[in-house]
Image 1 (cartoon, rainbow, N blue to C red):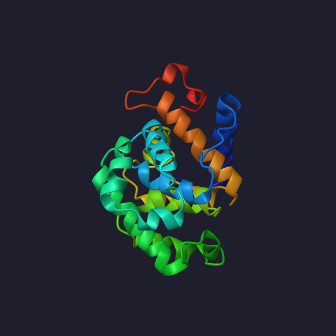
Image 2: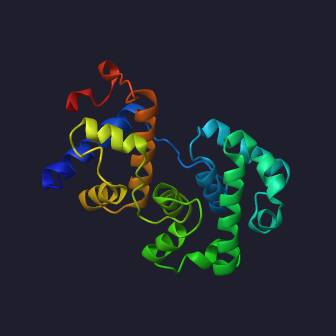
Length: 218
């Protein structure tokens, strides 16, 4: 894995190229930080289209608020989030987060704001069902912390471009981006969203390199 001044320049050129090609992504969609948190859990192992259906179900039942979701029964929650897949497990994951949220922050996002990012991250990673990608998505998109989110697209794209090894650990890849790029919340937000767009449309398991906007860097 390379971390040099040249790498910083290359990563910036990748961003500029993707932004010119795709435009602003307006990600993460969500009306409130709390909705973003629940969406980050629901999007595990599924598409955003399916998450939207589950979120819509929760809204129709007026459950997408901390106090309401904290008291909903596991059975009802599982039924409502069924479109997102793995609904029984995700119901348990959401319930686990809600217990933490109640115990530590009294179901109030504002109470999380004074807590340092590294402490929040450790807390999130200790919750059942929340791994590094979900934790970092919550930190970046819901809590506005300068944390770079790494997903399967990130690993695939940048290993194919020989900027990192596909077998590197999540933490090493996250460190690679955070030490190579300026710590900027809006920039991290947009960069990750652009990576997702590229991964979905071009850098698939069978890549469409001919039309890829990053072809010139290969």
